Length: 92
Image 1 (spheres, rainbow, N blue to C red):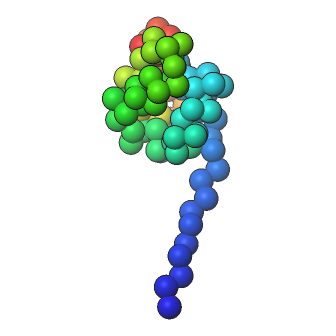
Image 2 (cartoon, rainbow, N blue to C red):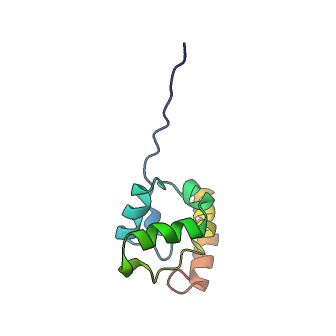
């Protein structure tokens, strides 16, 4: 007998990542990126596709640093994340 198990991932507050606000967080959650770990593994080009599909107002956002920031958050390296964010300019 095969028992299917589903892992439920509670959405994390991706807004802790520089450059992600409530609307983009919602877009990422809708696209299945619900945790820092998932965002850390996401390809920035794929994230850009999600943003572009949501409309022109999102095309100015640059997700290049988001996976790196998310990896630090996933590992509870909050001080390193803060230092990285202090060196960034609006998610770029």
